[in-house]
Length: 198
Image 1 (cartoon, one colour):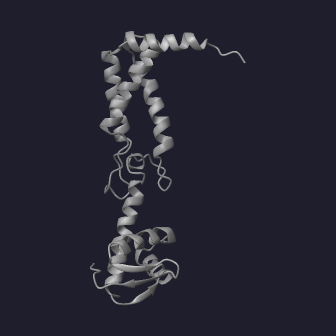
Image 2: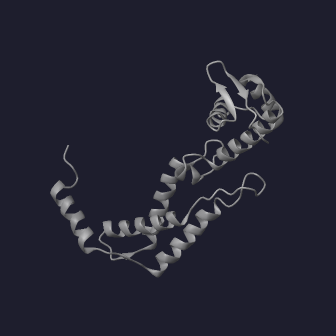
Image 3: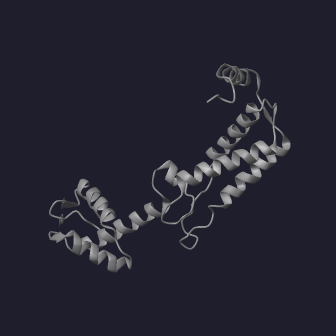
C-alpha cells in the first residue's frame, strides 16, 4: 500500500509549519470562540437536582484548549490567521473527545468531573448522601455487630432507592479506615465502634 504522502515530505512539512507558522486569531474567530465556549458552559448550567449542584460542561482550561486546537488547525494548513472554520472544527473535535470521555453513564450528561476526578458529580453526590445516611443509621447501633445485607436493606428503605452493594462496600471500607467501624468483608459484617457520630 502506497501512503498518500511521502514520509520525508510530511516530516519536512510539519517541521516547516512548527518553525515558521504562528497563526493569530482573527476578530471573527475570537468572537466565535467566545460564543462557542459560552454555549458549552450553558450546556451544563442546569442541575438535575432542582437547580442544586451544577454540572460544568466547560472550564477555562477547555477554552485554552480550544484556542490551541484552532491555532493548530490553522498551522496545519499553513494559515497565518485562525479562521472561524478553524474554531468550528476545534469545537467539533473537543465535543467528540469530551463526549467520549466525560459522559456520566447515570445521567447521560457531559460532566467535566469525569475527566478531572474520574467520578461524576452525580456519583459523588450519591456517595456523600449514602455516607451521611449510613452514619445516621449506625449512630443508633454503636457497639453492635451488623450484617451488611441488613444495613443495605435499611438504607434502601431510608433513601427510597436501591443501594448498590459495591457503593456500600466502598463507603464501609472508608469508614473502617477512619476507625468508625470494623468491616469484615469476607463475613460481610461490621462492628460499629463508639466513635460514630451523625
